[in-house]
Length: 103
Image 1 (cartoon, one colour):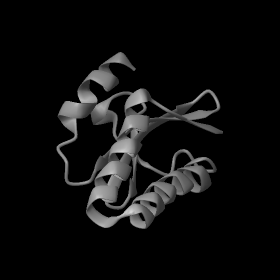
Image 2 (cartoon, rainbow, N blue to C red):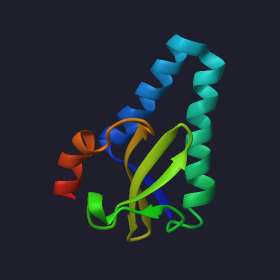
Image 3 (cartoon, rainbow, N blue to C red):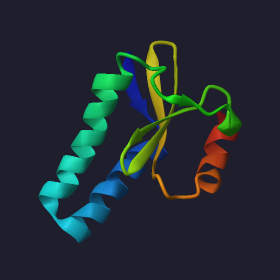
């Protein structure tokens, strides 16, 4: 399975790195983003159904924690499509609504 990122999913990774770069430095920011992408590559790529089903957010939506973040994704057609990567304490409905309606 291939991992694909939405435009917003890519932007989320960039924002995560920028935030942690400002707060904790280059090594921590880089390591966190690498941990997120490695987890997606190693775990979800092998078992795309590992995440929790979140039909309440849209058809086929699943979530998987990479603490302190939560990855929102769909799988199908040989790909895992990363919709968003948001902090676990964030209210998830507003930033996801437009993406889930279209998908």
